[in-house]
Length: 261
Image (cartoon, rainbow, N blue to C red):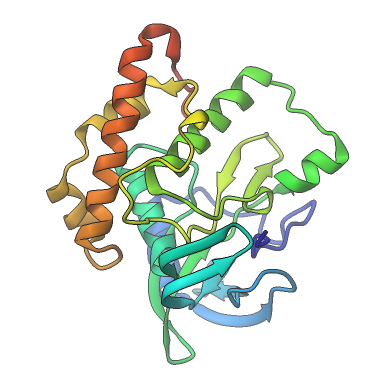
């Protein structure tokens, strides 16, 4: 298993951040000066934690420059053909999440770092632990229904993007028990099949409605620089299977997830 490339602390060093819009966070990530950096001690894709500042705001970001393609890759989960591991997929994941109305993926933008193109991703504040640590500590959300609903959204999103590397380390849980998905560098496979249809259990109504509206033109406009036409076709084919499943399940397979600020 590949561990998440994210340093989790009980209290974020960047907790005191004014309310910013997503556009403002994106602009900060694109333009703020890199003040300091340190390498992650875990993971294999060379993630760096950077402190950025624009003179008014100081906040951390995750930087990834990985961009590899292999015709055949043998990992802990077996052999994968047409393997890709790319920083571009962090940006694509964020942009697709926005199209679907999911406020569960931190802003991620492309910019240059040390002579390479990279994904700069907003560092999540007030993280209590990742899912691996939560399970070790046997902690449970005070709102079981909310927790289960958010986890269902995570599982469906991973089926939609064919995420081959969702592990317990790249699900972050904040102090208010919100779940955040990070690190999508090994997602967006071209396969038209679901990785694990058993992960489809229940779905948020708004999420389902947004998936129905996805089309090639919209995704090309939003993500053309980060995923290929074949990868878009894969998303749409898997989307069709997901929508068909929940339409067959009827109202009993649906819920309404409370919106997050």
